[in-house]
Amino acid sequence: MTDKNNNGREQDKQRSEQLVHELVQKITLEPGNSEAYYELATVLVDLNSYAQAEELLMKALGLFQAQPKVVERLHYGLGNVYYAAQDYGKAIAEFDQLSQDLKAAGYLMVAQSYMGSGDHKRALAFALTALANQPEDPATLQVVAGNLLAVGNMAQAATYYDQLLQLQPTNGAANFDRGLVAMVQGEAYNHYFTLAKQQDPSYFEKGQKRLADIEKFVQTQRHPDKE
Figure 1 (cartoon, rainbow, N blue to C red):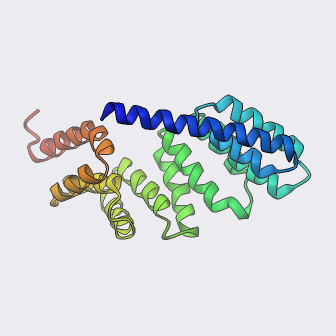
Figure 2 (figure 1 turned 90 degrees about the vertical axis):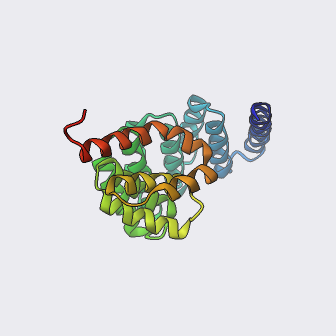
Figure 3 (figure 1 turned 180 degrees about the horizontal axis):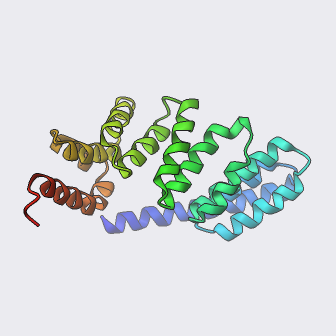
């Protein structure tokens, strides 16, 4: 299994590196093609080459400064670079300046940036704003639910996870987190974990510490005299 995973990662890396080569050639032949810059930055992020992606987009912002819509898309791309690099302050600054065309996507990324930095209350505010613009977007529902779970609002978290699972019943991460909510609320929860283990075994394994912490919390609530 490990060899297969390593081979798969190596093949993905080779494809990405080939794509970088092709996009560099495309930019050389078509220096006015802004989308090629954006696509190249995206591939560089996939390769964890964040500094190169930032440098490329900063250069593109100078080249296309007379085209407002292109500039906005490049700022969105730059925000994604900073988000991937976990530089959440810079990411938020980029997403904050987006206009209406990219505002909903920007709100979601701001929410995820605050979530990444551990500020779940601000993350929730931006996620709810994003959800108002795209009420059936699974990614937005998941961010809203995740932040509600993080701040301990289990009843509302359950509502949003249920909406998400109606749209994506095979979402393993959502099933796992819905199971955590159910556990805290004293509801049946094993079926959520069973589904999560089948659908997203990696997320399930990573969630074991959270599961143990929740179980301990629930036991403490039921038997406060036992430490």
